[in-house]
Image (cartoon, rainbow, N blue to C red; front, side):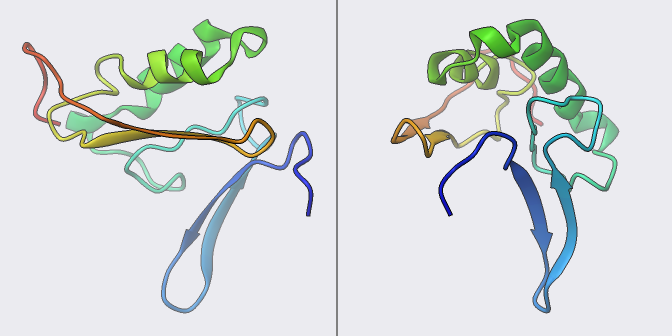
Length: 112
């Protein structure tokens, strides 16, 4: 299928099939899907809640200012970036973008 607006989703699978799917437009944030290290149907660990700050950063960035550079700025900001972050990947099907960045988190920086 060709990429169309509104087709974003996060699919959680196990060895037998799909456990959960979070589609664009089924939550509070109707123009983006933010995925961290925790399945979208489960609460993150209280010591590693990057979901809340990530959603806040995306809302602050705004839909009209979203770009590969804007997403990278969100993902390299603390606490989304932490000592356990190894790399960040920015992808766009429609703009033919696939960029991988090796990350380090300068002190002070949380361990997770």
